Image (tube, rainbow, N blue to C red):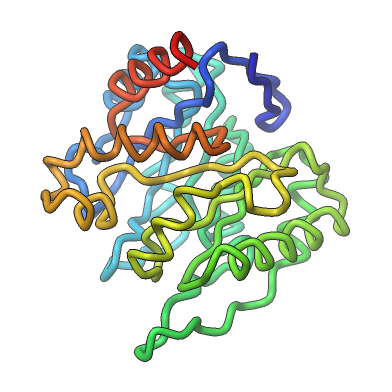
Length: 276
């Protein structure tokens, strides 16, 4: 049985990985079927999601930034509605400390931050090299420590397995040194965020190589461009490719898969459970 802490909750599953269902309360996320609000969130719970990941600002290439106030106004009704119906762990996909603080007060458990607490996205330079990463926020880390929330630290920009692992390891050390319990930390290699196809594929195949396999790895592959690179298919036709890639990443050590298609992901993991 796989067991992890999500905020103040302890969760367990007989499947080889937890399933995080995506709820994008946005008009511009790259996969339209992921967009929605309360109805989508409750439907993913019914389908069996272990975690909900709720976001009020897209992080797709060319996304339109929104203010913290707008982001909060989008996600808060969903958090409140879910909390009236379920104790499911809720992750908030945001790079803004003020947004997560408001979400945590409303019942969220996990901060899913593509900037690994730096508050700004790290992107690739025009020549393909990594842009400089902003310094992480001590205030944010101390808040996570004080509240007992969990945090997902993601790498953004190009990078080899070693480079991604080193960056995530540095952010882990930063969090722990500011009081965050090590069992509240999850790492994400940032598939599709400024990386080449070759870098994405290497990371999908070796999640256990990140941070010495000491922290749960979240793999977010669902319908992304790297799946299209492998299959030649558009986003709406990438489900089979996503399931195959998720299966490989779980076999190689990923403990959480972030998906648009919860029921299909659960079917895949159930088959893996019986055949491993």
